[in-house]
Length: 150
Length: 115
Image 1: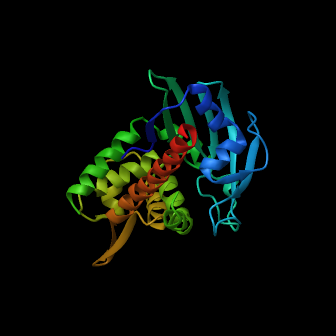
Image 2: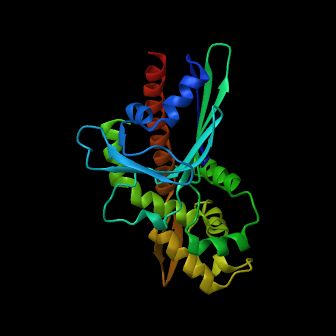
Image 3: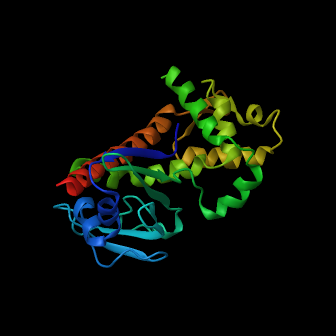
């Protein structure tokens, strides 16, 4: 089982155009469907209400990690952390990275989301001591095994 | 993200967080790997041949049980533990859904920058 999501998409638009659509908070909000209150700033939280009809009461929130112009934009978030009764700040967030590459016809965009396997802080030390590597491989083995024995 | 997919995620997020956390530990993964054979095992069997104590095995089994990964089966006078394969599929389903929502968001981005 892969604990990382990776997507590649060819965009018929110049890299500068794609960079703007990703990092200008108003443009990002248009295609991502969220009304962001302020710009993306490295190390800071940007939040806003989701603009899907029926979900406007939900708040979207992300902390910008990297902004390397026309190359890399990344943020951490708690995907779909929308239960007001739960304090998500204690859970490890996932990392979303947008990588841009120039192509003959426009831009190749690669999106990855990683960190689903992260452990809560109070278990991290313990897990680190016991970690002899390769747990992703173990998960693959388990998944294969389980799939063979439904 | 679709409305349907989104609302399903709202409902199902918490159990998945528990799943990921429960599996983010080498000892627990090793226990899951032992149970993958399909045969329910007792605490004594799970402790045998490993460097960890019976108490530690018990503690880790409880975490796995609370996350729905492992279930306990009564066998005679002792409790045995078995894997609940559905929970691992549930985690894969969660990733598939997050993945699907990225597909939709990127399709919207594509029409946004190409118009």
